[in-house]
Length: 271
Image (tube, rainbow, N blue to C red; front, side, top):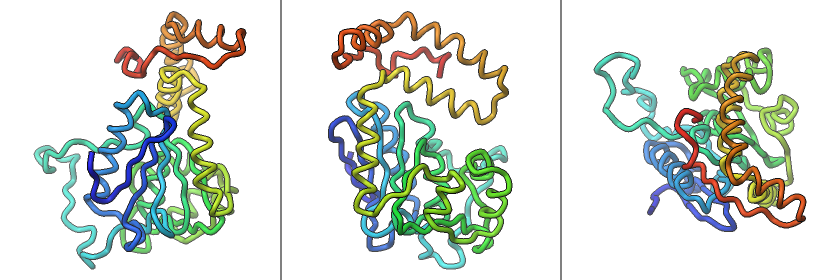
């Protein structure tokens, strides 16, 4: 695909997706939103892609919504929960929807949707200079993209209440202390570290990763008993696939594994 606002490149089984509006600090608009959905779908369909790294061009990750419409920036959205509303556009595809691990490499400014969107990624790394904030309440708005759930699950209720209600800016180091990011690295080491982490998924069975990711996200809203039940059937299915034998034999024979099962082979009932 050809993208207007993104760069998309696949190398060594990793899709690198870069928001490419550096002159506007990668601010978010309808094109960025639609193209990120398309890029996630493209990576998901490609069996050569084993993981995705998401970052921003230039000095920012994403400095929030593009404010070129001024006071009307947030106006005009329909309430899609009401019957008959909406524009019949396809539902967005977010990082948590796809079968591949998605790693956000956050540098510079990551505010507003530039913070809520990477919360939908599986792993977040940040540069030392990154400045983050869920600034919605300071713009007369409220956080979205399930931030009210995800931030408290990751950082605890009190931390979530603080950063979501105050809309304040905080450092990468504070984000790490709250668990919002996994690691903080020097700026020039951020993307190499994210790519190295992504390439490590070459060693894992793609279908096993896909099911594990699905269950991790399902676990946000599951009880312990629900999860025990949800794990049982796909565990049995994986155990009867050729990758289960290959995983054991490649370990015993001290050689790289040759995986055969694609995420596309997973029965719908396990998705």
